[in-house]
Length: 368
Ligand code: MRU
Image (cartoon, rainbow, N blue to C red; front, side, top):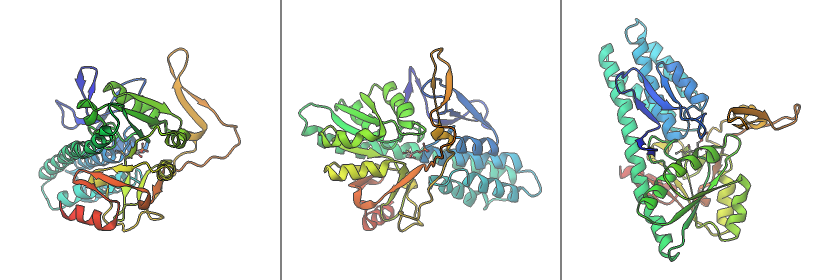
């Protein structure tokens, strides 16, 4: 997507040096656009766990490059296979909920382990990571085209008034490689002059909505309004939301979906108000080993510092971190919740739109 007059992805290979993987450091947005170089598997683990990169598809692609960087580092050592495997295990453990992480690392190991020669290993691991990156871009483009048709249908009934979409967290191009999942149908609709307006949940405590989704929508000229996380129910009750579209970190085979904490409450409010609630995801976010999601998807618990402190620009335009809670109060910081399939109207995937049921999802996967 474009920032000013330049096209960006959230991750790419350095133009002149393929041993450097470059990412947008998302910790500084929307205040500063900083590019970070990743050159070792340790850099990748830090980037994922510290949320320099975040969002399920982007975590997966970064992890794939992490395995490539491990091959680059260890390939000529006597115990290369063991060291690469150990690095892959550490990368896999860097965040627990997004299934794209293990999907990408396993894919890399599958191809690397078949090859003996160090330089061939390097070559194939590079190609695999690049392929995964391209696949995610294409998947998001397809999600956009399928999802746009839903927005078109709603627009037809609104006589030129904007379609109001509510989204939670950042399932935009920053969370994928390009286009986004939940945002892709919105960008496609906007590009075709279908009037859209997005309600952006701020998404405490990391504020991915307020900081990232609003930034990307703004750069693309999409009308949007930031709301506090608890406003969605009221907006739905008062007829101001036509559809909810969110992303997924892991969807089980029955459609249960883990996404950023608070998604479940939005789904409940949408159901109570008869508002369609869609999950947009590439099929790489479907966990084929999990029949049910509820109580089975691992839910990340993050540092309570994220709750106790907030970050923003001070009056001197400098990034500042301030404490917002009493010194001795305890806090608890779950990063995700699981929305049961029964509350989900449908899944918008790169293979088409389907119901959030075991039958439909299995059929969709078989049709690949
Ligand atoms: O903790 P984050 O910022 O990695 O969480 C991201 C989300 O929950 C996204 O909605 C999800 O990964 C889908 S991204 C296309």
